Amino acid sequence: MHRFILPALFFLLLVSGAHAHSVEYQIENRGISARFFFLPDEPASYSPYEVFGPGDTVAHQKGRTDKNGVVSFLPDRPGAWSIKVTAESEHGGHAANPVIQVSEGLLVESFSKPLVATYQKFFVGIGVLLGAFGLWALWSARRTTRNTAGCTPAE
Picture 1 (cartoon, rainbow, N blue to C red):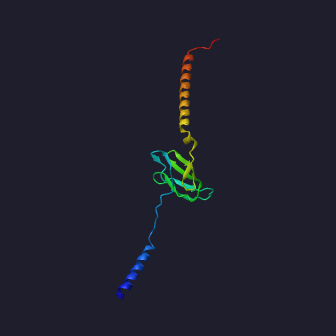
Picture 2 (picture 1 turned 180 degrees about the horizontal axis):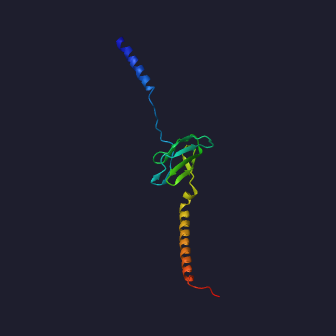
């Protein structure tokens, strides 16, 4: 009986020592994610970013967006958090800096949008009206030039 106790204790020590060298993990259902893209089907993949917490001068987190243009981070306090993303496209560099208001429960309370995104329909409407006015002015000027091209000035 004593012959089996010492090997069993040795085996238990060996197994518990192996456990100390493993990589542990924990999965939690919390955090904030933001998706960055040029067009809905054109993500800002692998773009560098920095996340700053309220009042921070040193980044809380740095990295690159994933292949879908997503940045995820876990805030550790409420307040205004900002994500600075610099993305490269065929048209050059682009930057985005949304500010996310994080509540006491460390959830998204609200977030800022660029002026163009907030009033997109208004800007598109103004663009269509200006384009229509430009075409009308061009057509009108061309018609006036045609009518006066063959006339001689009155003396």
